[in-house]
Image (cartoon, rainbow, N blue to C red):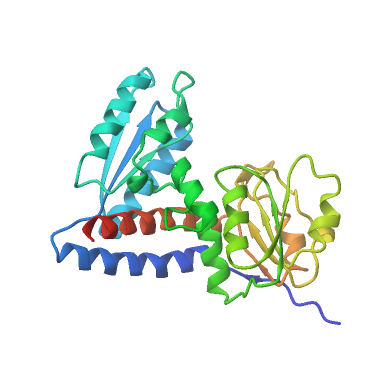
Length: 286
């Protein structure tokens, strides 16, 4: 039997396509006198956060969305931040509010996220958003797993009856990912640091989503031939090069489809933030 190598799911190309759609819908709102607006709040000077925030703001502007970047000193108090969010909640020109994490240690991130109006929670981290996803009501889906679902959709992959294994149980990726897959009638297994035999689980999987932030968590011997592998990880190897949670070179020999790092899930995350912001504006416009 000849082995075909896994086909790439190109996050850059798919992002471009989806952002074109966002730009068209934003133009339609602008014709009604509404410009979708996103407020991005950065507290402190974490260098990685500064890069993420810059990329988010640029993506907004490129797609015809209005974006406001608010930078504050690390010494900002929790009360000051909560007051600022309250003001943005009441600002009609702002449809989405994003607070870049991590926050300085003296600020309770959970309290901050819960202070954002659920109607403007474009990150999808509010308890109301998580609850809406849990019960299948309209809300905002967290951007990274939402992007992963769009990638599966782009290859016309029917999840019904398929076994999906999610490696990782974070509130940002793992748990919402599992719920989204479940909504599409997949049978879902969530694996994590307490899982006894990860390989036994992944070998049964038709779809694997790796989201733990650890290099080479998934290797070729752990993947069933033809499986779809989505790599959410963002790590650096010894040479300082960006890599994911999956041993890409090995796994692509076995997988049917695979996402690269970089150029896979990363660009999709920011794209889904634009989609959520646009939807927030559309909902507000009625």
